[in-house]
Amino acid sequence: MSFYSNFELPDGQGWFEIIILSILMYSIFRFFKGTRGSSIFSGLIVFFISLYILTSVIQLDVLNWLLSKLTLYFSLAIIIIFQPEIRRALARLGRQPWGKSEIASQKNIIAPLIDCTKSLSQKKIGALIAIEREIGTRSFQDTGTAINAAVSPELITSIFFPRSPLHDGGVIISGTKIKSAGCIFPLSQKDQFNKTLGTRHRAAIGITEETDAVVIVISEQTGAISIAYNGKLRRGLSEDRFSRIITSMLTRKRTGLDHFRKKIDNEDENRGVIKMETIDD
Amino acid sequence: MTKLKKIFLHLWEDKYLFILCFIVAFLCWQGINEALLNDSQEKTKISSKN
Image 1 (cartoon, rainbow over the protein chains, first blue to last red):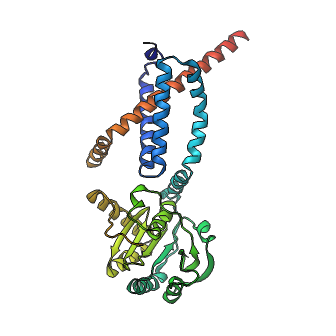
Image 2: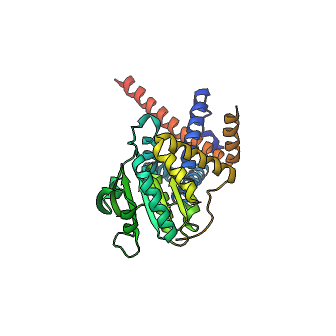
Image 3: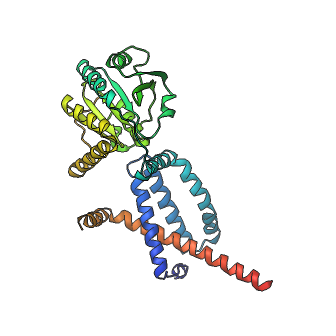
């Protein structure tokens, strides 16, 4: 009985605040869903709620006091545990329309990119090419070797040629130049990708989760062409389809990307999952 | 209208998660409210002493 007496029935304003809090928490849960941290997060929440209810029912005042003091450290722990997710959320926030800046036209790199992708796909040479958009990729560029050269099919093909020193890792294109090669991209931590995708594809998704870069992936085993954007992967594209999508994305500035994002979102809704035909790399 | 329907449908699919969030939010609100009340009570005590 005393457990219930601890609670005060909220007034209209209180209920409104509770509903806003629930929506906020629901959004946070949704954001963490599918990530590695989601199970830790749910575990911590369940642990704290059950302990709080237990200590309140049996009136374990000391434990209850300890629990209330621990909540401060709990919030600190959340920041440490979810550091990658928080970073991703902030990057996404910075990507919103109100923070948008002009993207330099990347029309000039379309033809060489299409040429080299076709050639690499036909030869079944694995490749990972990230095209920087609004959000900078400097931190990833620094993990590789600086190139700073004009985009050419020959250069990209020679970078990814097996046994070349830079073939492991990704190439980053900024503006109309290849800025860096042999770069290390963060791997996507989404559980749904763990068993079905190889490292190269997961790295492609990983960088698109943190930035708005467009990433081209070519499978080493099947030669399949894929495009990753906004944390999603479109696999098994035909050469024509790939040409159309990449042209649309790089010529129409932001609208091309938005169109691609909407298209992928619609397809996800219809199919329930991201299109993945084969397991490779 | 269809957008609103979509949102409600989405929420209905995730009803258990939303209920859990509501419970957590309710408990959080109780804690914060209690702390605020204690704070204001202490402030009035101090002001009445002065």
